[in-house]
Length: 538
Image 1 (tube, helix red, strand yellow):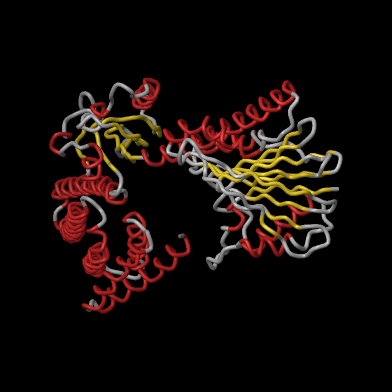
Image 2 (image 1 turned 135 degrees about the vertical axis):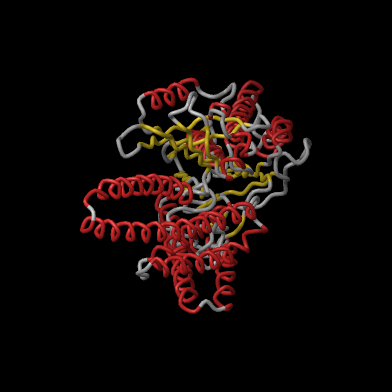
């Protein structure tokens, strides 16, 4: 976005300079086109306002006389108004803000003209004073008094101009001016943005204290900080909850700045208000996602697993926005259970559902193991498909209420018989690379994702593995990863890469896949979680 803003700012400055030089209709058409490009590029009024200020400042540096300045400001106003036209369909209150800007620009032109007139009058008074000094010494005192009065008036005018300039420069934010010399520090000026932000008409605000924005949930400590700054006539920057006229709340980033006269006496306060509700909400969501990420990572095994006849390693790289990937492996007396899953959604709720899934799955596997030991039965009839069926039943109500779904691939590997039993709940099919072969096969079984319906039958399949066989379980964050050109990493690319890793350990295979994925995407971060588990029979 910064590159687009910089390039568009250069075009804007060039277009304004050309229009100031020639003032053709084509220049206004170019201003409109630049505004349209800004809208299509996702830029806002603040961005194009910044371009306008920078371009106007550059243009005014090239003029030398007040007449040229007035002419340049008038033409620049036309160019600015035309470049804002495309925003009329996308910004509420634009017409009022644009009208206010035209009024302020016109006021600035009038003030420049008045200043020129005052300077001319001052020169005439100075010439007359010199003549009177030569002719009549007695008239010197009166002429000097007139001159001092004009200087005082000029200082008062320049002070008012500085106040107006500050309001113009920050016109996109809510601005108020209060009179510190009056009782209760009343508002004497409020710009349109402040009125729009608070819901009060500007006439309703004049004469009232800004505390009308405070409400039941406004932080008392923040209020005391403001009062302390006012008592000490010090600047104050604080964020607090305020209330609009209709009672709705918003987070207000408030900057209060004292204004002093030429003698150093406090005369006014300027308050600049910015509605930061969206920024605060985004920060709260970011914090929630960070919690979800910590929950997600806490569910994962801390290290690879080495047992007689098998090596197992897993990996999860959380996305920029946390997802719901989960994998696990845990040993029983005669087999190791391996699972990989993906929950829909990117939130704390999704992370909590995955935590519940992990607990439910482990509890069910442990319960069935104890039942088998108590009844002295084999695993037959209590395998992976039956476990997935029970887990889906237990999770169905919670998933339905949360409007979430889970895909899962679950398998049990007996390191005594080398038999691998597995069932699938709508997850990506794992890849099997048999020892001595260079082509991978998919392990698939019928079964719906969790949360669609309460009663689901999950097909259970089994195969006997041999030493050297490799099995890769993964989530769609790998196959659906995209490079800058929009191409997917894809299942075929993953399968071909996995087929070259027959002699590697599970951890080496994981490292190689991650390296290839980062090289392909030309990034170390991904849009979705990247998770995988590798089983190698030894």
